[in-house]
Each structure stands twice: as C-alpha cells, then as structure tokens.
Length: 225
Image 1: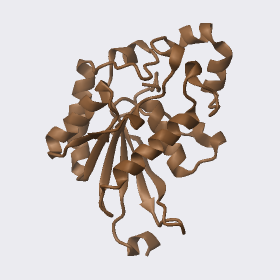
Image 2 (image 1 turned 90 degrees about the horizontal axis):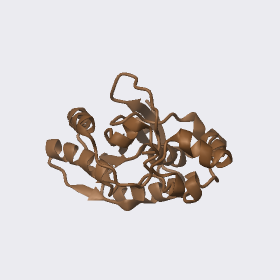
Image 3 (image 1 turned 120 degrees about the horizontal axis):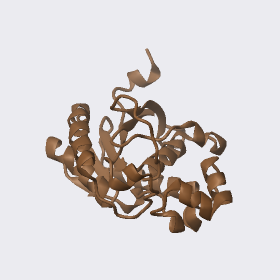
C-alpha cells in the first residue's frame, strides 16, 4: 500500500485558469488590467464548471479581477459554494507591457522580454513584478485559503495563466531553472496538486496529478492573462 493511502484521503488543489477574453484572442499581455470574459469565455467557464463540480470541491477562491470572478461564479452556481476573493491570486503586474502584444513588447524592450521568455525568475515584467514576486504571493494566498479546507477537501483556485504556472512551480519546490518546464494553461483548463505526507516541520508537500487538463489540446498563445 502506498504510504499516503494509509492516511486516508488528502487535500487537493485545483488551479483553474479563467475563460477567454478579447485580449487573449488578440494576443495582448493582460497582466492586472481588468478585462472581462468574452462570450466564448463565459461558454468555456460554464462548460468547465460542470466538469469540475464532479470533483466535489470544498471551497472556491478567486483572484479579484473580473475575468476570474466570473469564471469562479460559474462553478459557484453549480456547487452552491461561495466564492472567496484574494487579490494575491492576480496575474503578474506587467507594468509598461500591459495591453501590448508580444511583438510590440519585443520592439519596446527586447532584452528584458528575451530574459522573461527564457524563464528568468528575476526579470521584472515591464519593470513591475518578477516571477518570484508572483509565486510568493500566490503561495501565500493558497495557504490562506487552505486554512478553511478540511483534511480531505478540495480547494479550487481560480487564477491566471502566468500566476498559476509559477504558483505550481513554487508549491512543488521546483528549482528556479526548471520552472520553464511547466507549460502554460489554456483558457479554462486546470491543473491539480495532490497532497503528500507533510514535511517533518508539518508543512504540506504536493505532487502534480494533472496539468492543463479539461479540453482537447488548445495552443497557449498568451499565458500571462
């Protein structure tokens, strides 16, 4: 028997990316600009919510931006759960890059964008946040939400492509030079972390159970959104 099985069911975290927006469709770096879901995004959210409801979530927490809250509310409508809101789950603050396509950013700031796309965790997007900054605040937000989740419960975290990717890497304890090994999530797809036996200090440990699940393969054209 696997040692975790002897302890009974453990917690899961479902990281769910919001549905599509017009800026996603246009290939713009949304960052923390508050862009709403478009018609396709609402359709994606309602379709995915019916699938995620089968996981019997215990709690839902969302970034405070409109596109994530609307996605979370689709799951709330199916499950009857309230949606907690935490600004720590926002997408990367991309400063001067926000609202621009990656081709435009390449013309504005080619060296910084090259480092960013190469996965440098210390490069500040548009002069604002680094991947390390984002990962740390996402981790703190997840810890706050987990405090209300039972030992065998499932927390659904509704966030953004870039924030989810670095949050996963941080929670899994991946070395910084391997963070780029995780692909970004398609709109309204999800990844699942499963709890392992705790560290000696009592803190949780996680394994990646699913990644970018929920749809047939869809190319990820703009992650940070």
